[in-house]
Amino acid sequence: MTQAARPWLRRFLSKCIPGMSFPGRRLPDGRVDLRPFASEEGSSRIALAPLVPLYRFGIALRGIALRSGLERVRRLGAPVVSIGNLSTGGAGKTLLTIALARALSGRGLRVDVLSRGYGRRSALPRRVALGGTAEDFGDEPLVIAREAGVPVYVAAQRYQAGHLAERESDAAPDLHLLDDGFQHRQLRRDVDILLVTGSDLQDRLLPAGNLREPLESMRRASVVALTVPEAPIVEQTLRGRSLWQGPVWRLHRRMQVPAIDGPVVAFCGIARPEQFFAGLESTGLHVASRIAFADHQRYVQHDLDCVLDAARTTRAVALITTEKDRVRLVPLLSSIPASLPLETAGLRIEIEDEDAAVEWLLRLLPLVRPLPC
Image (cartoon, rainbow, N blue to C red; front, side, top):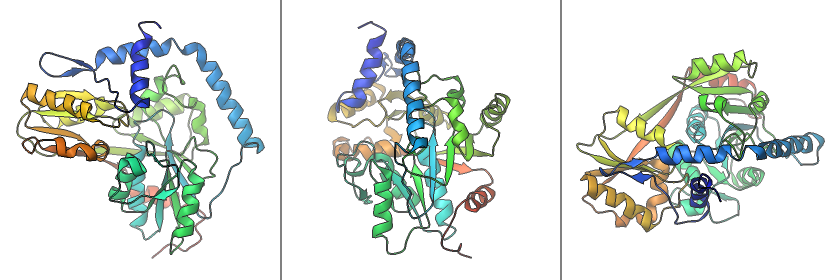
Protein backbone atom coordinates (compact mmCIF):
# COMPACT_ATOMS: atom_id res chain seq x y z
CA MET A 1 0.00 0.00 0.00
CA THR A 2 1.32 3.45 -0.89
CA GLN A 3 2.00 5.98 1.83
CA ALA A 4 -0.58 8.33 0.26
CA ALA A 5 -3.32 5.69 0.52
CA ARG A 6 -2.87 5.04 4.25
CA PRO A 7 -4.74 8.12 5.55
CA TRP A 8 -7.70 7.25 3.31
CA LEU A 9 -7.67 3.71 4.71
CA ARG A 10 -7.60 5.10 8.26
CA ARG A 11 -10.70 7.19 7.54
CA PHE A 12 -12.40 4.17 5.95
CA LEU A 13 -11.61 1.92 8.91
CA SER A 14 -12.76 4.54 11.41
CA LYS A 15 -16.19 4.46 9.77
CA CYS A 16 -16.37 0.68 9.52
CA ILE A 17 -14.88 -0.54 12.80
CA PRO A 18 -16.48 0.72 16.04
CA GLY A 19 -13.93 2.11 18.45
CA MET A 20 -11.41 3.17 15.85
CA SER A 21 -11.04 6.92 15.43
CA PHE A 22 -8.30 9.00 13.91
CA PRO A 23 -8.60 12.61 14.98
CA GLY A 24 -6.04 14.87 13.36
CA ARG A 25 -2.45 15.52 14.41
CA ARG A 26 -2.28 16.97 17.94
CA LEU A 27 -0.40 20.26 18.18
CA PRO A 28 1.57 21.37 21.25
CA ASP A 29 -1.10 23.87 22.29
CA GLY A 30 -3.81 21.21 22.31
CA ARG A 31 -5.43 22.04 18.98
CA VAL A 32 -5.92 19.32 16.39
CA ASP A 33 -4.57 20.04 12.93
CA LEU A 34 -6.92 18.58 10.33
CA ARG A 35 -5.00 19.84 7.30
CA PRO A 36 -2.51 16.98 6.93
CA PHE A 37 -5.28 14.40 6.84
CA ALA A 38 -7.36 16.50 4.45
CA SER A 39 -4.52 16.94 1.96
CA GLU A 40 -3.26 13.35 2.21
CA GLU A 41 -6.75 11.92 1.87
CA GLY A 42 -7.39 14.11 -1.16
CA SER A 43 -4.20 12.99 -2.90
CA SER A 44 -4.90 9.32 -2.17
CA ARG A 45 -8.44 9.55 -3.52
CA ILE A 46 -7.21 11.17 -6.72
CA ALA A 47 -5.18 7.99 -7.20
CA LEU A 48 -8.51 6.14 -7.40
CA ALA A 49 -9.59 8.13 -10.48
CA PRO A 50 -9.13 5.12 -12.83
CA LEU A 51 -12.04 3.44 -10.99
CA VAL A 52 -14.45 6.31 -11.67
CA PRO A 53 -15.54 5.05 -15.15
CA LEU A 54 -16.48 1.72 -13.58
CA TYR A 55 -18.55 3.50 -10.92
CA ARG A 56 -20.20 5.69 -13.58
CA PHE A 57 -21.02 2.57 -15.61
CA GLY A 58 -22.69 1.06 -12.54
CA ILE A 59 -24.84 4.19 -12.14
CA ALA A 60 -25.86 4.01 -15.80
CA LEU A 61 -26.79 0.33 -15.50
CA ARG A 62 -28.97 1.05 -12.48
CA GLY A 63 -30.72 3.84 -14.36
CA ILE A 64 -31.53 1.41 -17.16
CA ALA A 65 -32.81 -1.15 -14.64
CA LEU A 66 -35.10 1.42 -13.02
CA ARG A 67 -36.47 2.74 -16.29
CA SER A 68 -37.04 -0.72 -17.76
CA GLY A 69 -38.69 -2.18 -14.66
CA LEU A 70 -35.90 -4.67 -13.94
CA GLU A 71 -35.53 -2.93 -10.57
CA ARG A 72 -38.94 -2.50 -9.00
CA VAL A 73 -40.13 0.97 -8.04
CA ARG A 74 -42.82 0.86 -5.35
CA ARG A 75 -45.41 3.49 -4.44
CA LEU A 76 -46.89 4.28 -1.04
CA GLY A 77 -50.46 5.31 -0.44
CA ALA A 78 -49.58 8.90 0.51
CA PRO A 79 -47.44 11.30 -1.56
CA VAL A 80 -43.69 11.28 -0.99
CA VAL A 81 -41.39 14.32 -0.89
CA SER A 82 -37.71 13.40 -1.09
CA ILE A 83 -34.93 15.56 0.38
CA GLY A 84 -31.47 14.58 -0.82
CA ASN A 85 -28.17 15.64 -2.34
CA LEU A 86 -25.50 14.48 -4.76
CA SER A 87 -22.54 14.01 -2.43
CA THR A 88 -21.74 11.92 0.63
CA GLY A 89 -23.06 13.89 3.60
CA GLY A 90 -22.79 17.41 4.92
CA ALA A 91 -25.30 19.32 2.77
CA GLY A 92 -27.97 19.90 5.42
CA LYS A 93 -30.53 17.24 4.43
CA THR A 94 -31.52 16.49 8.01
CA LEU A 95 -31.90 20.18 8.87
CA LEU A 96 -34.05 20.83 5.80
CA THR A 97 -36.17 17.76 6.60
CA ILE A 98 -36.81 19.18 10.08
CA ALA A 99 -37.65 22.62 8.69
CA LEU A 100 -40.11 21.17 6.16
CA ALA A 101 -41.71 18.85 8.71
CA ARG A 102 -42.32 21.81 11.01
CA ALA A 103 -43.65 24.01 8.21
CA LEU A 104 -46.05 21.36 6.86
CA SER A 105 -47.31 20.10 10.22
CA GLY A 106 -47.77 23.73 11.26
CA ARG A 107 -50.30 24.00 8.43
CA GLY A 108 -52.31 21.13 9.86
CA LEU A 109 -50.95 18.37 7.62
CA ARG A 110 -50.25 14.91 9.01
CA VAL A 111 -46.57 14.44 8.16
CA ASP A 112 -44.07 11.72 8.94
CA VAL A 113 -40.42 11.16 8.02
CA LEU A 114 -38.95 8.01 6.49
CA SER A 115 -35.24 7.43 7.14
CA ARG A 116 -32.67 4.72 6.69
CA GLY A 117 -31.52 4.87 10.30
CA TYR A 118 -27.81 4.73 9.52
CA GLY A 119 -25.76 3.00 12.23
CA ARG A 120 -28.61 1.27 14.07
CA ARG A 121 -28.25 -2.38 15.05
CA SER A 122 -31.70 -3.67 14.12
CA ALA A 123 -32.80 -4.26 10.53
CA LEU A 124 -36.52 -4.28 11.35
CA PRO A 125 -38.77 -1.34 10.36
CA ARG A 126 -39.56 0.65 13.48
CA ARG A 127 -41.06 3.90 14.66
CA VAL A 128 -38.52 6.06 16.45
CA ALA A 129 -39.10 6.36 20.19
CA LEU A 130 -38.10 9.74 21.60
CA GLY A 131 -36.36 8.08 24.54
CA GLY A 132 -34.45 5.65 22.34
CA THR A 133 -30.78 5.52 21.50
CA ALA A 134 -28.69 5.90 18.36
CA GLU A 135 -28.04 2.15 18.48
CA ASP A 136 -31.80 1.59 18.27
CA PHE A 137 -32.72 4.08 15.57
CA GLY A 138 -29.65 5.98 14.29
CA ASP A 139 -28.60 9.47 15.34
CA GLU A 140 -30.31 11.49 12.60
CA PRO A 141 -33.78 9.92 12.99
CA LEU A 142 -33.64 10.62 16.73
CA VAL A 143 -32.72 14.26 16.16
CA ILE A 144 -35.48 14.63 13.55
CA ALA A 145 -38.10 13.09 15.84
CA ARG A 146 -37.13 15.31 18.76
CA GLU A 147 -36.72 18.54 16.81
CA ALA A 148 -39.54 18.23 14.26
CA GLY A 149 -42.16 16.77 16.56
CA VAL A 150 -43.52 14.36 13.90
CA PRO A 151 -43.44 10.55 13.68
CA VAL A 152 -40.23 9.13 12.21
CA TYR A 153 -39.93 5.59 10.83
CA VAL A 154 -36.69 3.77 9.98
CA ALA A 155 -35.92 0.92 7.59
CA ALA A 156 -33.21 0.20 5.05
CA GLN A 157 -35.98 -0.08 2.45
CA ARG A 158 -37.90 3.13 2.96
CA TYR A 159 -41.01 1.55 1.41
CA GLN A 160 -41.17 -0.72 4.47
CA ALA A 161 -40.89 2.29 6.76
CA GLY A 162 -43.69 4.06 4.89
CA HIS A 163 -45.85 0.95 4.85
CA LEU A 164 -45.46 0.70 8.63
CA ALA A 165 -46.40 4.38 8.98
CA GLU A 166 -49.55 3.94 6.91
CA ARG A 167 -50.51 0.70 8.64
CA GLU A 168 -50.10 1.73 12.27
CA SER A 169 -51.36 5.32 12.19
CA ASP A 170 -54.86 5.97 13.53
CA ALA A 171 -55.19 8.68 10.89
CA ALA A 172 -53.51 8.11 7.54
CA PRO A 173 -50.58 10.45 6.86
CA ASP A 174 -51.12 13.21 4.32
CA LEU A 175 -47.56 12.89 3.08
CA HIS A 176 -44.18 11.31 3.78
CA LEU A 177 -40.87 13.16 3.87
CA LEU A 178 -38.07 10.92 2.59
CA ASP A 179 -34.79 11.85 4.29
CA ASP A 180 -31.68 11.39 2.10
CA GLY A 181 -33.81 10.00 -0.69
CA PHE A 182 -32.40 11.26 -4.00
CA GLN A 183 -30.55 8.00 -4.70
CA HIS A 184 -33.24 5.79 -3.09
CA ARG A 185 -35.05 5.55 -6.41
CA GLN A 186 -36.78 2.23 -5.67
CA LEU A 187 -39.41 4.30 -3.82
CA ARG A 188 -41.50 6.50 -6.09
CA ARG A 189 -41.66 10.14 -5.09
CA ASP A 190 -43.86 13.03 -6.17
CA VAL A 191 -41.32 15.79 -5.50
CA ASP A 192 -37.50 15.68 -5.37
CA ILE A 193 -35.80 18.47 -3.40
CA LEU A 194 -32.05 18.44 -4.09
CA LEU A 195 -29.49 20.31 -2.00
CA VAL A 196 -26.46 21.42 -4.00
CA THR A 197 -23.29 23.02 -2.60
CA GLY A 198 -20.50 24.93 -4.24
CA SER A 199 -18.09 22.13 -3.45
CA ASP A 200 -20.25 19.71 -5.45
CA LEU A 201 -19.45 21.69 -8.60
CA GLN A 202 -15.71 21.09 -8.12
CA ASP A 203 -15.94 17.48 -6.95
CA ARG A 204 -15.39 14.11 -8.60
CA LEU A 205 -17.45 10.95 -8.62
CA LEU A 206 -16.77 8.24 -6.06
CA PRO A 207 -14.34 6.75 -5.29
CA ALA A 208 -12.01 9.58 -6.35
CA GLY A 209 -14.34 12.23 -4.93
CA ASN A 210 -17.54 12.57 -2.91
CA LEU A 211 -20.20 12.68 -5.63
CA ARG A 212 -22.63 9.77 -5.54
CA GLU A 213 -23.98 10.75 -8.96
CA PRO A 214 -22.85 12.95 -11.85
CA LEU A 215 -23.91 16.59 -11.75
CA GLU A 216 -26.23 15.97 -14.69
CA SER A 217 -28.38 13.82 -12.39
CA MET A 218 -29.77 16.95 -10.76
CA ARG A 219 -32.12 17.25 -13.74
CA ARG A 220 -34.27 14.60 -12.02
CA ALA A 221 -35.00 17.12 -9.25
CA SER A 222 -38.15 19.20 -8.89
CA VAL A 223 -36.36 22.05 -7.12
CA VAL A 224 -32.74 22.79 -6.17
CA ALA A 225 -31.96 24.17 -2.70
CA LEU A 226 -28.87 26.37 -2.22
CA THR A 227 -27.42 27.77 0.98
CA VAL A 228 -26.72 31.46 1.52
CA PRO A 229 -24.20 33.13 1.13
CA GLU A 230 -22.93 30.94 -1.74
CA ALA A 231 -26.39 30.58 -3.32
CA PRO A 232 -26.12 33.40 -5.94
CA ILE A 233 -22.82 32.26 -7.42
CA VAL A 234 -23.83 28.57 -7.34
CA GLU A 235 -27.13 29.33 -9.07
CA GLN A 236 -25.34 31.42 -11.70
CA THR A 237 -22.90 28.56 -12.33
CA LEU A 238 -25.64 25.94 -12.58
CA ARG A 239 -27.62 27.99 -15.08
CA GLY A 240 -24.51 29.03 -17.02
CA ARG A 241 -23.45 25.40 -17.43
CA SER A 242 -27.03 24.37 -18.32
CA LEU A 243 -27.12 22.00 -15.38
CA TRP A 244 -30.30 23.48 -13.93
CA GLN A 245 -32.99 25.78 -15.29
CA GLY A 246 -35.78 25.08 -12.78
CA PRO A 247 -36.89 26.67 -9.49
CA VAL A 248 -34.41 27.39 -6.69
CA TRP A 249 -34.92 27.62 -2.93
CA ARG A 250 -32.49 29.63 -0.84
CA LEU A 251 -31.64 28.38 2.62
CA HIS A 252 -30.17 30.16 5.64
CA ARG A 253 -28.17 28.23 8.23
CA ARG A 254 -28.46 29.39 11.85
CA MET A 255 -26.26 28.19 14.68
CA GLN A 256 -27.46 28.55 18.26
CA VAL A 257 -24.37 28.65 20.46
CA PRO A 258 -24.62 28.85 24.27
CA ALA A 259 -22.70 31.61 26.03
CA ILE A 260 -19.54 30.15 27.57
CA ASP A 261 -17.01 32.29 29.42
CA GLY A 262 -13.64 30.67 28.79
CA PRO A 263 -11.90 28.22 26.46
CA VAL A 264 -13.77 25.18 25.15
CA VAL A 265 -12.95 21.92 23.41
CA ALA A 266 -15.11 21.50 20.30
CA PHE A 267 -15.50 18.05 18.80
CA CYS A 268 -17.81 16.32 16.34
CA GLY A 269 -18.23 13.32 14.07
CA ILE A 270 -19.95 14.82 11.05
CA ALA A 271 -19.24 15.00 7.33
CA ARG A 272 -17.94 18.58 7.28
CA PRO A 273 -16.45 19.36 10.71
CA GLU A 274 -14.74 22.54 9.50
CA GLN A 275 -18.16 24.18 9.04
CA PHE A 276 -19.07 23.41 12.64
CA PHE A 277 -15.80 24.76 14.04
CA ALA A 278 -15.93 27.90 11.90
CA GLY A 279 -19.52 28.53 12.99
CA LEU A 280 -18.55 28.34 16.66
CA GLU A 281 -15.64 30.72 16.22
CA SER A 282 -17.76 33.18 14.22
CA THR A 283 -19.86 33.74 17.34
CA GLY A 284 -16.78 34.72 19.34
CA LEU A 285 -16.48 31.45 21.23
CA HIS A 286 -12.91 30.71 22.37
CA VAL A 287 -12.28 27.31 20.75
CA ALA A 288 -9.03 26.13 22.33
CA SER A 289 -9.08 22.67 20.72
CA ARG A 290 -10.86 21.16 17.72
CA ILE A 291 -11.24 17.39 17.37
CA ALA A 292 -12.85 15.82 14.31
CA PHE A 293 -13.96 12.19 14.35
CA ALA A 294 -15.34 10.15 11.47
CA ASP A 295 -18.85 10.90 10.25
CA HIS A 296 -21.44 9.02 12.39
CA GLN A 297 -18.67 8.03 14.80
CA ARG A 298 -19.85 5.40 17.28
CA TYR A 299 -18.11 6.78 20.34
CA VAL A 300 -16.25 4.56 22.80
CA GLN A 301 -14.42 5.47 25.99
CA HIS A 302 -11.12 5.94 24.18
CA ASP A 303 -12.65 8.69 22.04
CA LEU A 304 -14.02 10.50 25.06
CA ASP A 305 -10.64 10.16 26.83
CA CYS A 306 -9.07 11.96 23.85
CA VAL A 307 -11.54 14.83 24.28
CA LEU A 308 -11.05 15.01 28.06
CA ASP A 309 -7.26 14.96 27.63
CA ALA A 310 -7.53 17.95 25.28
CA ALA A 311 -9.67 19.73 27.86
CA ARG A 312 -7.04 19.21 30.56
CA THR A 313 -4.25 20.35 28.24
CA THR A 314 -6.05 23.56 27.24
CA ARG A 315 -7.68 24.17 30.66
CA ALA A 316 -11.07 24.24 28.97
CA VAL A 317 -14.12 25.13 31.02
CA ALA A 318 -16.58 23.20 28.82
CA LEU A 319 -16.99 20.80 25.93
CA ILE A 320 -19.21 21.57 22.95
CA THR A 321 -20.53 19.35 20.19
CA THR A 322 -23.49 18.89 17.82
CA GLU A 323 -26.94 17.52 18.62
CA LYS A 324 -26.26 14.41 16.54
CA ASP A 325 -23.02 13.74 18.40
CA ARG A 326 -24.67 14.17 21.79
CA VAL A 327 -27.22 11.51 20.82
CA ARG A 328 -24.38 9.08 20.12
CA LEU A 329 -22.63 9.98 23.37
CA VAL A 330 -25.50 9.03 25.69
CA PRO A 331 -23.88 5.77 26.96
CA LEU A 332 -20.74 7.71 27.93
CA LEU A 333 -22.22 10.85 29.49
CA SER A 334 -21.64 9.59 33.03
CA SER A 335 -17.88 9.60 32.31
CA ILE A 336 -17.82 13.37 31.85
CA PRO A 337 -17.01 15.18 35.12
CA ALA A 338 -19.63 17.61 36.43
CA SER A 339 -16.98 20.34 36.44
CA LEU A 340 -16.73 20.09 32.64
CA PRO A 341 -20.24 20.57 31.20
CA LEU A 342 -21.06 19.20 27.78
CA GLU A 343 -22.83 21.92 25.78
CA THR A 344 -24.64 21.52 22.47
CA ALA A 345 -24.67 23.93 19.54
CA GLY A 346 -27.98 23.78 17.71
CA LEU A 347 -28.07 24.01 13.90
CA ARG A 348 -31.18 25.16 12.04
CA ILE A 349 -32.12 25.82 8.43
CA GLU A 350 -34.64 28.48 7.44
CA ILE A 351 -36.22 28.49 3.99
CA GLU A 352 -36.22 31.95 2.43
CA ASP A 353 -39.83 33.01 1.73
CA GLU A 354 -41.02 29.82 3.38
CA ASP A 355 -44.74 30.42 2.77
CA ALA A 356 -44.26 30.72 -0.99
CA ALA A 357 -41.98 27.65 -1.06
CA VAL A 358 -44.48 25.50 0.86
CA GLU A 359 -47.41 26.67 -1.26
CA TRP A 360 -45.45 25.75 -4.41
CA LEU A 361 -44.68 22.34 -2.94
CA LEU A 362 -48.28 21.61 -1.98
CA ARG A 363 -49.51 22.44 -5.48
CA LEU A 364 -47.39 19.56 -6.81
CA LEU A 365 -48.76 16.96 -4.39
CA PRO A 366 -51.81 14.77 -5.03
CA LEU A 367 -53.15 15.18 -1.50
CA VAL A 368 -56.14 12.98 -0.73
CA ARG A 369 -57.45 15.03 2.20
CA PRO A 370 -58.37 18.70 1.66
CA LEU A 371 -55.90 21.13 3.17
CA PRO A 372 -56.94 22.35 6.63
CA CYS A 373 -58.20 25.92 6.64
